[in-house]
Image 1 (cartoon, one colour):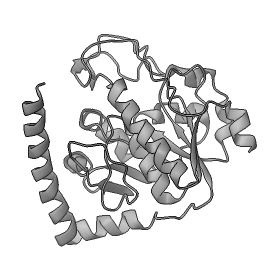
Image 2 (cartoon, one colour):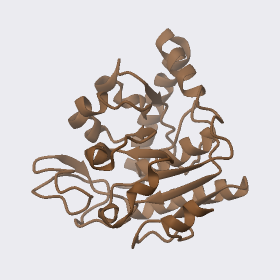
Image 3 (cartoon, rainbow, N blue to C red):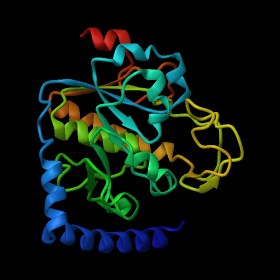
Length: 261
């Protein structure tokens, strides 16, 4: 995609986002949605949470250690709930293709579910669901106020980081953020799964025929660096306890070490 095409696309999305934000401000449903998001502001100040990615490394992680922790589950982590023996404290899903194909599953989530306003078509009326405004622009952004919007940062993990910041968590521990995939191709390209999924913790995570977008690892690293700076500038921190993960942006620790602090 050329710079001109990218700029035109961003401007189009910005206009759509401005309209959605206006509706969020003026309509009764919009005001109720914003009030729902605001109830999470600073409710976990000084506490710790774990953001659970969906990489194969989860199979090498002692997840029983998370039972008494605040946790953010991402995308289809619910496929592991029965095995875990508990559900995550919060749930985040952003990608429209994932939401569209799994809307019935997300409607069954018991935890507060955070998605973006673009997914309202599929999840409108779902219980405990917050529709976040998607901040669109030509520059990276870390939102300190999720009630006003979030920047997607090319990965749902980044949105979870902004929510963790908004809730006041002092320390964020990452697990399952492998930052490597078993398939290759153009970043953000929409593809169709051809069989067992080797890029996630469950071979049926993206089963045959499932449409999903290839990751943009390079641009997501820009977002991660911004998240690290924002947290550290505020005296907080993000650490990476992913077993064998390829991400190098955050300090590496073991999960046991991180939870012992």
